[in-house]
Length: 205
Ligand SMILES: CC(C)(COP(=O)(O)OP(=O)(O)OC[C@H]1O[C@@H](n2cnc3c(N)ncnc32)[C@H](O)[C@@H]1OP(=O)(O)O)[C@@H](O)C(=O)NCCC(=O)NCCS
Image (tube, rainbow, N blue to C red; front, top):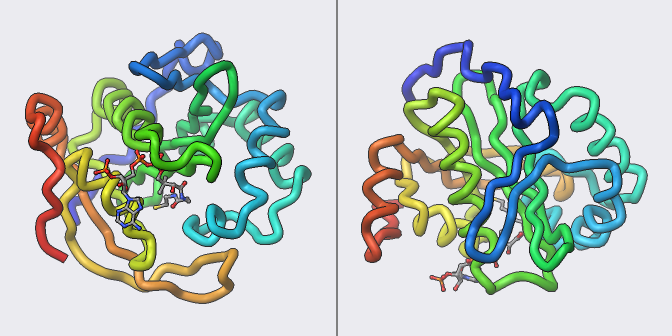
């Protein structure tokens, strides 16, 4: 694991102004707002979503959604994270974010169950990773998925992430440690995979 410089989250004027819109073919990423609370709650009020995240509580309440969104509105990147709402058809269907985890910078995401299997996570994560490499001066990103969450492993593999190791990571919703497959994506590999329609081979693990 290579160390990441500490000045990794320079202010991003477009993000701070709330005017950011990262456009994909089917989804748009924008800064989350408090008005997303009902959609965030609708997606996260599902154990099969929350159990695959490390820090979200279970049960997940509307109050949890409001508290998180207030934190985003008041702090945003200065709290060490760039969260994005994933929007399609005028509806927020999930979130994706880039977060400072101390020694590493991690990608995380979720999609509401009603919207699984349409490629939204892959497209949204690709947009967020592109933002991170373009604006945050990162050389690599890390991500981890619990061993029983093969769909997320597939999303990461499609982006070009490479398996590195398995660690025990605490899941707040499950209230226990769960084996977590850690993966990294070097900047140059992401660029190469974007130009490779065959991209997405999971190496090892
Ligand atoms: C994991 C998750 C983000 C996937 O979202 P999604 O929008 O359905 O993902 P995509 O459609 O972009 O891609 C899913 C891929 O996983 C594959 N997949 C789905 N279920 C699978 C399974 N049980 N085993 C292996 N692959 C699976 C799909 O076939 C697809 O791959 P393909 O494009 O090669 O066919 C979504 O299920 C989710 O939010 N889960 C709960 C929260 C979570 O896991 N967050 C990530 C934490 S690391």
